[in-house]
Each structure stands twice: as structure tokens, then as C-alpha cells.
Length: 494
Image 1: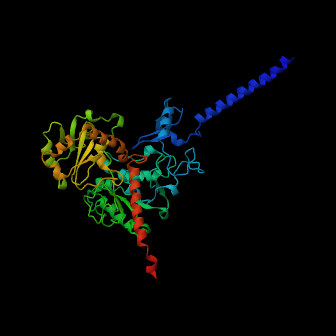
Image 2: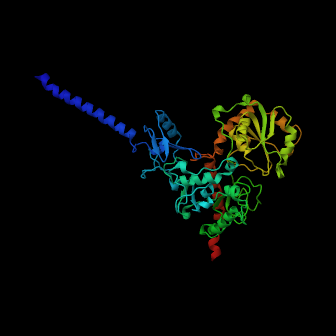
Image 3: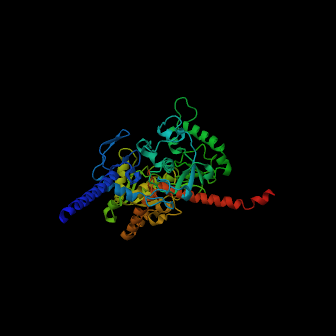
């Protein structure tokens, strides 16, 4: 009888155990397959540069979204883990362990903790993305970042090297997109009274490159008209009048951009390539910022970067040789170096696969020459950095990006133009640099290359983030000067 009475009890325990197992299994199943997974959606989204996007949704195959097909294989889990490890939480923000701003239920940056709060004018598209051929719907000012594949790409070739305003504008727009993983040093605010700096989203370099020439019966170029309209707009704004434009940020990276308006807007903070075509009262290091060109060659992965013994070319230069003004030194150096067996010094351009050839040449060279051209700077310096080829800078008037926080002497060689033109001096100097010294600079190049990368979304300490940090330092200086001037303001009113 005892054995019979135990059977229902054992059977009941067995049913409870089976039920618990099925409950746990079904819960795990739902978390893995549901759109409402506990894993934040930002973990599954990876946005790449220039019109390439991959959207990861676990275990969903051949799903059509927005006209594009995306498939996920069994390797997705490891890919998601990699993306998660690369996703950087915003520093100094009140984040919970889930990576979301506490109490909001969404990922995002805390404006009160941002290094820099930026107000951006909602200028019409003709000043920015409209120059890329983008046309939004009625009354739409900005592209919808929810569809990365629809973000208009910036044109390639030489246009791309002056594309700073494009990356900065995208970064500001994405600072209000809660699921875009990016650093929180800068955030866009909706009121100018909350801002540290006022950003002017004019794609001035692209305007010059595409619209500075007259067409048909035009008497004034589109580029000139846009600059005139911009000046009129800014001069009429209370934000400009408040400090005379000193807290406004304008990107004019191409040396010929903003030619018509630069004097009228010279009190603003300019983001420039150099000061080669600016009078000192309009542009100077006290108020303005030097930004790196966007390099044209592909960045060499650190693991694939050839060491000293794997770079058979001692000195490399490929580019325009006959230049005017300060660039005349290129031709003189060409005649000094062209017959040396371990020197590659030739004419080259972006045409006929020129960028790829330059990338291969730099990655095979120990030293890459950066010689002054029509202006003190050129994109070649940043191509060399991306190739981990130690730059040799021969440009006496050059200004370098982020030099207040980067010591270029750790990874570059500087030679005065007058010394470089002394017969034998340059080669004797470079041949005298031993393997250990070169390797130290090579290792440093691999560390600093991240500071010269433009990308979307931005990453901590990349070129976009470094520019914003630099702007913050300029704003601090402006605020310091303003505060000093206000010391006796009250007594002067009495």
C-alpha cells in the first residue's frame, strides 16, 4: 500500500520538473527570437562609412528591409559579440549596467555631461546635403539617419580629402539618434542658449569644388551666391550679434573655400587645412583649428604593416612636381633625388589607379616625403600616416592638426627647406636613422593613426572626436577672454 501511495507523489514531482524545464526553455527561446529582446538593439546595428550598412537581427534569415536583403548565419553570434565589445559607452554619463541612460529606456548621451554642447542652424539643404544631390520630402532639412543606406555619400576622388563638414554634420545629427554608438564628447542641443558653440552647416569645400565656375548665362556662381546668402543670414541672427560671431564654428577646409565671405565672417572659429591663403587677422592659431585631410589611401592594418626590413624603398614621393609659390622646392628636390637607387620620386595623380599605387608605394617605404605645394599642407602627410611610413616634413610654414596634444616629433622627421636643398643632406640624414629609432617612430604611427580617421559613426579619439575636443579647447579660451573683459563691466555702467 505504501508503494502505491508514493506513485502519484513521484509522478507529480516528475510533471513539475518537466514543466519547469519547458518554461525555462521557452523563455530563452522567446528572448532569442523576439524583437523585444533584452539585448539592446544597438548591439545588432553596425553602420559603416559611406552608404554601407549591416543590420544584424539574430536568427532571422532572408528578411527584406527597406529594399535590401540581409541574411544572418550561425556566425552572427560571434559578430554581435565583436560589435558589443567595440561599442563604447559615453563617458561621464549616468548609464546603468544595461548601457542605457537610467530612467529613459533608451540609449543616448546626457547633455549635462557632454564636453561640448553644440547648436546647429537648420540651414536649407542647398547649403549642405542638397549639394550632394539629396532631396528630402517637403520641409525636410536633414536626411533620416534611421536609414543609413539612404544617407547621401560624399563624392570620391580629390573632393573627399576636404570633406570635414560632412563628417561633423553627420556626427551632430547622430548625437540625437539614441541607437547610434558614438562617443558623447559632443551633443547637439535644440536651443542656442544651452550651447557652448554655434555650428554653421555649410559644405563650403564641396560648394567650391562643384559650383565655383560660371555656367551658361550666369553672372555670379552658385558658390558665391551661397556665401552671400550665408553672410546675410548670420549677420541677422541674435546668436551672431551676441558675441560678434566668436562662438560660431565654420568649416572652410579647402584653401579656396569661403573666399568671398571669409573676411566678413572672420571673427568665427574656422576649421582649416592651413593658413597659407589667409591673412593673420582673419585666421590664426589663437582662435582657429587645423583639421587633418581625409587620407586617400587605405589604412594599413597594424598586423599587416611591414617593419623596417620589409620596406625596400628608403624615400618615397608621388605627386605633382611642378608647383607654384612655396611648392617650387618639389622640382628642385626631384633633380637632387631622382637618380638615387633607393628613392622613388615620380609624378603621380589620382587618375589611372594612382591612389592604389601610392598606397602600395608608401606601405613599402621607410620614409615618405611631405613637401610644401601651392599651400604649406597636403593630403600626402596623412596618406603616409595611414601607411605607417615615417613622414619627412619639408614645409616651413606648415601647421599641424592637434599639435597641442600630439608631439609630431615622435613619429615624423622635420627638415627645413633650406637644409633639404643642400646636396646630400637629406639622404645622409635619413640613411643615418638606425633600425631601432625608425621602429620606435613606426610603432608610434600605429598608435596615432586612429586620430586621423574620419568615419560614421565616429569613435573615441578619431578625427571627428579630436576636432570637437579641439573646438572645446578654443571655446574655453574665448570664454576666458570674455570673462576677463567683464571684470569691470558693472562699474563702467555707473
